[in-house]
Image (cartoon, rainbow, N blue to C red; front, top):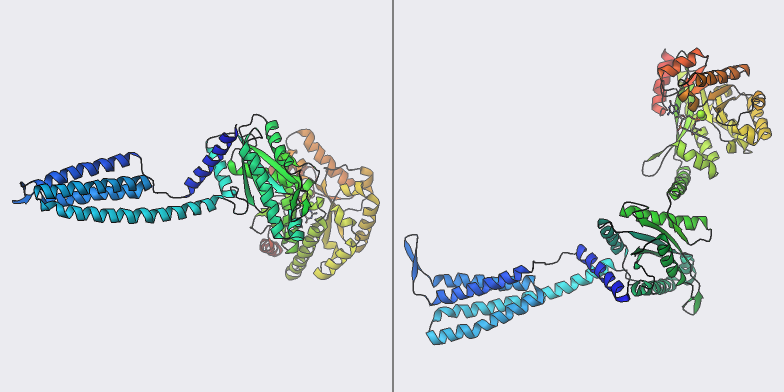
Length: 581
Ligand code: C2E
Ligand code: MG
Ligand code: MG
């Protein structure tokens, strides 16, 4: 693409964007000819009619033909007004010249034929000329004001580059035409630092200089692709690349924009060395929607900033969405902890005769927009981010206070199971925390059960065992959660002072599919019993599963079949009704 071609294309796009956002007085071209023709035709009829002494019969009376001249003359003048209104300068000049030409014609008719019927025509023409002059100059002022407004709407004031609006309009147009393009989201590294240490003025000059370097590349077309550079906000720019063949072309173009920053910027006598991150996504290969390409380019940019790996150019991949989501959830957990928005549900556990054994407290979290994030998603993030102990503590504290009150009020004899992560259990203050919640809630230690996963025995067996023995001395019960999903060693299990073994839902799900799966669950139950544990099956959803578990000697069940996780009110209702029975 040559320089001119590139420049013209940019101008065309900007013009199109401008047009799309403003209402213009537009009329089809043929209307010009129609109005002119109407004018000439009515004028000729007026001339003929005004010289006529005939009359026509209307409704029993006779109306002179000359009387129609006035009406038609007004009609012809209206044509001139419309011409000026809709066709700007061309319309105005055509009208003016046409109206002026009429004067000698009318005057000569008056003089030669002594026909005074044409005299009002002169005044009519004069008034029309005044009207079109007023309309034309008034419109011209309005148009220039509108053009200025339109320019401002699509232009970034500071740098003169097209703005975010122009950028999204172009993306909309390209996706509409199903044209291939890449969106590059650009962020200047350390720009905040420049602003805060050197002031906003210097920051602005930096942005202006960068914009001017990038505009030169885009306008001259030296990158070999068709580029459209925009400033979307602050230190963020978006580059749209078109007319490329391969991903390599896109990277080469981005490299040119990156390279243009390599020469230092000298601003206010200071040498600045600027770098930027370039995250990009391509349409339609990375995303099928315009907004998504935009968002995905941002995702890639965020990853560059997060990873701090030194790579300044990164293409979007679907994996990045997971990272992005993890970061988002981590933020939400921190916020929920700060605002004390972590709460709990309680899921009932029953013996095989459907008598309530107790409840398991399960963490719940809703974000500021009221969206519920499920623990399957946020617990692993909290674990990785080192926040799980705080989440655990919030559930510990809230669920025990609620449950202690419930037991006191109803006199029910029920267990409360709470989940403790490895990290939480290994914390030095863990035992003190348990003591404290027992004291505050008034729950009998025998009625509190702490669920830990078997991985704890592999990761930190000695320290874990010490902690577990202390809990046992306090009278608190222990459950081994998700049994069968980790690397259980029977010798560890044997030395583990647990009371309850929880068989993971994955085993219950497939238990009835084959005979060996059923025997596998039966074997776990037997081993649990041999070691002196009670056994509870998690995730029981069907009657058939319940029947099988009954037949192979399971002690308790927890699952949607008999009870989903409940909120506080629902728990109170359930406990009250079970106490009555
Ligand atoms: P978990 O401790 O094994 O808890 C049982 C999970 O299985 C719960 O999921 C429960 O809602 C779900 N469940 C129970 N019965 C059924 C069923 O019949 N069908 C299905 N589809 N699901 C059933 P939830 O609440 O989503 O929790 C998931 C996991 O998150 C928990 O598994 C636990 O490992 C963890 N978690 C939840 N709350 C806490 C907490 O406060 N602290 C810690 N450290 N982990 C927690
Ligand atoms: Mg559990
Ligand atoms: Mg479990």
